Length: 449
Image 1 (tube, rainbow, N blue to C red):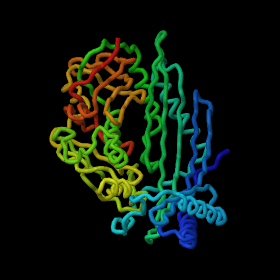
Image 2: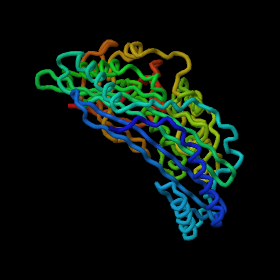
Image 3: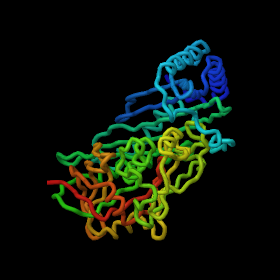
Image 4: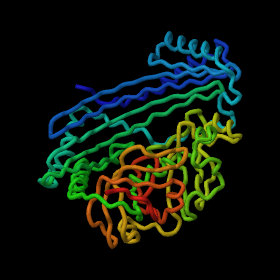
């Protein structure tokens, strides 16, 4: 039987590995160098119809070495943290660097951006979960969902996962630091049946601290209720209408926005928001803030993947894009400064100034239109901004859900979609690195029969 996820702090061991690799890189003549060592471990189980479907215990380790000889870069990695393997990995990176072409933008982060203080963000909460514990929780979750109604005829399973990641980063600028973080989740996916029609839906809870998870019974019951609500789904005739994205679906719209303003998309000129800094991208009432130091935040981090300090910033103010999401390399390519986002965004908060109605108020404001609760497919072009995805949800009449709908496609241009945001809801979903409420779009094309 897989064991519980370990609670011991592996950072000191990883620091020793990183320090040794840095010494080796210096000994072998690199002018600049950086090393990242990590250890991930976790336990996951899935129960389906009361029976154990899968149990997995995972323990991964890795070391990544990057060296620079002037502006020539070499990189190598290994899963073996023994000294001989570390020494050989550094040698490989150095050998590669000697044969690569010079890149005038290559090199480590500028020293002035390094994190000087490492705040404790309360990210590490090991669960100590055994396989037997995980199985029992998954069974409780699934049983609660199946008990909602006799029409819950089948199950895709309930899952419990507990993960812990420790990482240490160091470079030749004198930076050497690391931290550990955990992520735990409970999820359930159920199938409702009425006559010949079957509908599936799911729900989940996730948190850094297991004490912050929703009760498994509540997760299962919500999954069951969502599956039931989709019974009797119809198709729609093709039309244009307002569209309301539920909070978990709205997150994807903002994820496409972040992808378009990332450094690589900008310097490669492969973005529908190319050179858009200073432009009004969203309505004037919309604000976006990056908040990297939220305690227990799922995307919180004291420093980025290059050791740059993470800081609060306003990414969108009064609908106007304030800047891009940059690491040091992309910043140099664009003639700008790093924003401490090597590795991604850290807790994006989307809010509206002034009126922030709840979900029901947004339905009433929409009047008639489509409520989207699930999206399918990958029909988004980051270069042109063309957006087309399969969707399901509910048709809304007179400010209330009238009937479920499925097998439709919603389409538009992301630039137009962003400008046509009518309202942002107060029903914020914090289960991810982007925290947002429902978002109401004035009009989109809905393709159906």
